[in-house]
Image 1 (tube, rainbow, N blue to C red):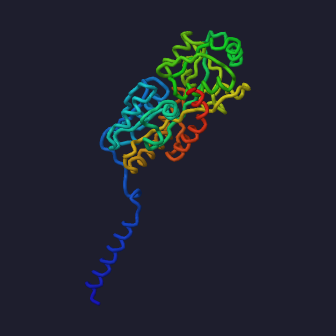
Image 2: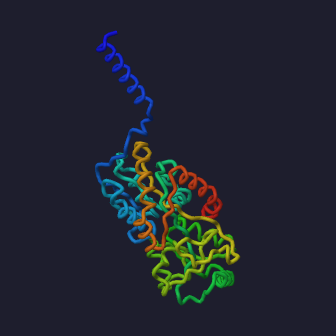
Length: 325
């Protein structure tokens, strides 16, 4: 065979093998998330609350990790459902995502007849944090311990008033679970968001509040956090004892802070943002900003976060049933 002919055969064979190898490479390995427009991150609560603080930290820490700005868009209302609905109705082009207290979203959709639910209406991108309920009283409250409060409530059924961030939200459900477990009857008073609930407790408008433990950070002279509704102490608010430590029953209801995408958003976009959120949550900047608000990063990938929501739904069903009676 002549040299030129041999060269043509070898070249043709190489091209064929290259084409075959390209065809065998998974699309996910070839595709790369490359957003061109700013990303709107809808937070369905007012600015200043626990969920909003995660959004602000993500936006700041994303610089250098995500090529475009991540813009927090607050859309409060209807216990978070207004913002969730807005995210659901947004164009699924990868420019709008939802970040919310997924415990509240899940429980609200269980308690009310909502048109959308977290597990059926959205794709789970990733978890970036976790909110835990605590029992707070004003600094000058006569209740020095949770047992003091429980004894007073039992002696005066239905007389004490307690605050939370909205009926059907996870603070409401966690609080009601605690009351049910300990045979306490008290009047619940809903407020719009964590900061408003905290203000009601500090101002003496209610006898106690069930709200995110991070809401106590920086208000030590005006509030006393008596207990954490969790099996173990918080990583940041380490001085707050749990209900369990104090020999009191509780229901372990917390709320993962999860980023969601619309069902029709391309899977590669979801994977790209999931990877970016993992990097953001691991960054010193994110941890620093969270620490200032009394929170800590708690990243979980989409699959793990989705499993947690299913477990939360199962655990909370008895409490939801009691609230519907």
